[in-house]
Amino acid sequence: MKVRDVMTAPAITVAPEASYGEVVHCLLANNISGAPVVDAAGHLVGVVSETDLVLRHADPTATVRQLMSANPVTASLDEELAVVTRRMLAASVTRLPVVRDGAVVGIVTRHDLLLALVRPDHVMQAEITAILADTTRSPANEASCTVLNAEVTLTGTVATLADAARIEALVVAVEGVVSIDNQLALR
Image (cartoon, rainbow, N blue to C red; front, side, top):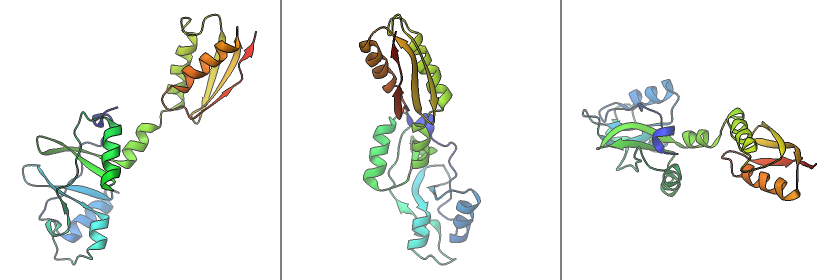
């Protein structure tokens, strides 16, 4: 998956001239823990977070420019999530502004990354059912599945133990599967 598939867009942003109180209100009102700081042209100049606000014990006269972290780590629209996740962890940040030509087009957070890892049960079940129906992958087998909380239960009959193992190997490769209860029986 790519950043564009999971990011929040448009990102809620704040201006460098915003006051301490304005940025606190913005974060609380939008239930977010940080925001990109952009100039009048929409170009990224920094990021301000709850941590910045708490650590700097800002007074009401402080501006975002005085509180923000300058030169933030960023992501681009077409980057792979694995690459962005490693960058986020290496930089010890919880959000990356997504930029195109210097302008903020969205934001990707650790929360977004977690949501990308979770696939709905019905989506996984449909994918696994298609695998089981593909006679080139599992010929002469009568297998079915149920998926609950990303845990797959395989039931039905197979011609050989090798077929049962092959089916399990195909299912474990399905994105989002966390465990398999292989109850396939020999015919």
